[in-house]
Structures are given as C-alpha cells and as structure tokens.
Length: 332
Image (tube, rainbow, N blue to C red; front, side, top):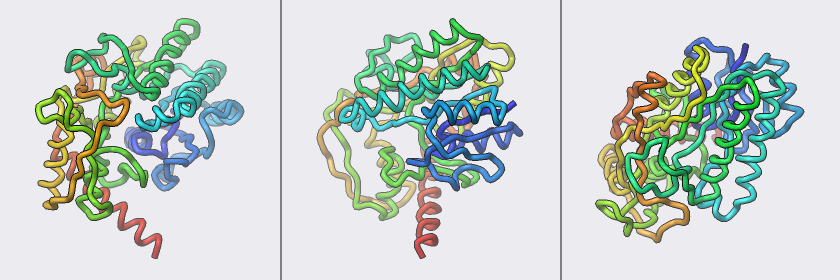
C-alpha cells in the first residue's frame, strides 16, 4: 500500500515526503509545480506532475500505485489573496478537494489526513483556542478549508473512510538536515520575509498593523516548526492505522509571538538591523490566535521537539542562504 501526498513538492508537503521516506513508508507525490519544485521531492519518491482536482489523473494514480492513504496539502494559502480572489480559492481548495475525496472513496482509500488551518476560527474570543471553539472564519481562505472539513465529516459517515484534520497555526523553519525549506519566491510567511530582508535579498519589509489589541499592537501568532508538523502527521497516520476514529486537532505550541517580536529575533540571530515599514492592517488578519494543543498531545501522542523561536529563525536563515546559493549557481 502507498501513501499519496498532494502538494508534496511544496513547503510542508516536501517535509512530509522526507519524513515518510525516513520512516520507510511507500509514497507517491502529486503536484502541479505551480508553487512547488521538482527538486524538493526526494529522488526515490515518484512524482506525478498534475492537478489533484483532475479526476482521471487521480483515479489512475491511485490505481497505479495502490494508494490506501492520502495526506492532502495542495492548496492556495494566502489570506489577502483569497479576499481579492474568493472564487479561485473556492475552486482550488474546496471544489477540487471534493473531486479528490470522490476519487478516494471510489478507489477504496481507508485513511485521509487533511491540512486545515487556524483560519477556521477567525478572530477567536479566547486564546489559546481549543478545537471546540466556534468556527467563524473571516476570510475566503478559512471558509474554503472549513468546507472541506465538513465534507470529510459527511463522507466518513457514508463510507468506510476515517480521517484526521490538522489545523495548522503559523508554520515556519526548515528541515534540520538542510534538505528542504520554504522556497517559494514570493512567499508571504513572516519569518521567510524577515530572513530575506536580513540577508539583503529584499529591501526591508512591512508590518501590517500596529494598532491591534495586543501587547505591542502587532498581530500575535503561534509559530510551529515544519518538522514538528510533519511528525504530527506521522502520529495521526499511526493512530488511524491502529483503529483510531476520525478526529480534529490543532497543531501549534500554545505560545504566541507578535510580529514585532519575531522581527527582533531575526535581527538578533542575523546581526542585521534591516528597515521595517509600518503599514495599515490587511483584510482577513485576526489580532491574535494561539493553539491549544492538549488534544494533539493526548490523542496523537505528539511531542514537539523544536519549540524554540530562535532555532526556527536560525534554520530559516540557513535555508535562505542555501536557497540563494542554489539559485545563484543555477543562474551562473
């Protein structure tokens, strides 16, 4: 049996593919390479270049590789972009996920792990936010993901499929062995942008809003290391294989850092005082959101190993240097 990883050439998906390979699992990756990279997929893992919403391709792939389990990462993920292009997000994140689920059911897939988001909570009244808090997404991105959660719940009631929904908070860092990292040129991740500014790869950076009801006025977020997130998926997979029922879990460290605090850490680790421009708020950004993670620890047996912002920043800086050197050599 094989695990299908959609979006496995992207940031989180490539770390998942590496973790599965390290664990000795049989894997196939599907990615259309619009934001992913062929080189990010480990050499021993087959890559099917195409869209996860292509019914014929997915049906053929599941049959050819004897797919029994799916870990679904592929999605559009930029909140402000979702506000300006809601139909694009509902097509890519929701409608295509419905096609993928139909193919999974028709192909006899037993287990499905879905990468959801903290954006389903919107602007929560309490932090840390538990999985039982009201779901009030304030962006098309969050709504597009929540709709997939609902579909999974309904599909699991009608068919012999069990699932795990993992609601990510802010994913950051890079593979400790330097094999992968956040590589999208125009990524909107705070730590990547700050690392690029520190390395002189961009002329400073912007902070969107310093008038939020937080200690320093900037948005407060829970930053989780990408390798700890990949481990949560492995733990979820093992739980489903052992007969575990469908479940939804947060993935975060139960601790928040403000945007300004993160920038200060990047400046400290890099030793560079890069320029920071203060701008107005962006649509769809909640003031503060921090994960309660007791359920993931208890039910999945998840134990984070990289809960350290300085470590996360250091590895992000190291990866950004490596990525820049790779591109420089390729251009030369």
